[in-house]
Figure: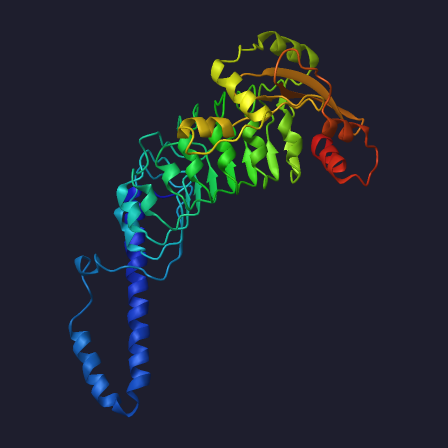
Length: 386
């Protein structure tokens, strides 16, 4: 294990050795190319030998352009040595399991960096560079096991990220700006203090794995159904008493973890007492009429905000109702029987309190299917019971 001062010496020696190896290789190449001019080349080499060994100051500007991966995990580093920047071709840097409280801005001088591992340090919200987005090639960032309290704004600016690990922090908030991470494939937020997740999470269309386990979530946003590429959804160890109805639309889902959640009747009933139905506003009533009557309109007829509002309408899930709603709806919890073996409380939304709460047709198709060849039902059975 090395402290920062010891690491500085180690890195300098490494760079010096690499430089000497390159220099020797260059001399050997010159000799081979010299051929029958060896005598002249020998004179040149003698002149260089007379210069003597290079001093430490003379090597301060030397860069290691060969090393691609630097493993500095499990040391006693309190800060980053500037010598790291002299490894100018680094692609992967592992600084995990140290005692870092701050990542210096000079880290941004590594333009080729693709993977940065900072898990299990002591980094707080002010511990990362503000201009992190200048690392345009960064694809993987691991900040798990630190002291972050939110998903930092600068993280949302690294638009090329594909893998972001933020588990085991103290995060209570996910900023709406997270929607900018359109290349994100894995988002790990397990082991935090989240009580809600924003709707903007549903705009991460490339997401294949979403880890929200071991938080304080009581519900999920309906926009979760927009994550059509999602293969793994981990929700265990939360306070979920129901799930949004749209979760059954995630047909590509191969892993769904729900253990250690209060998905039982007594919790469902307690949640139901808290459900309120807000009286529709005049704006909503007018919008419902426009949609139901299919009244024509264009962006030239209405202000932009009203056009956007009209496009946000949702169909009532009751198959016997043709109603729509915008911001005012009835939240109704219903137990759905998957494959005749597993009952799961799902939240679905009705356009009014007078609307019948019959189970939607696509639920009934799942619950009544006992065939092993019914792919959606069989898949959901494996997900929920596995």
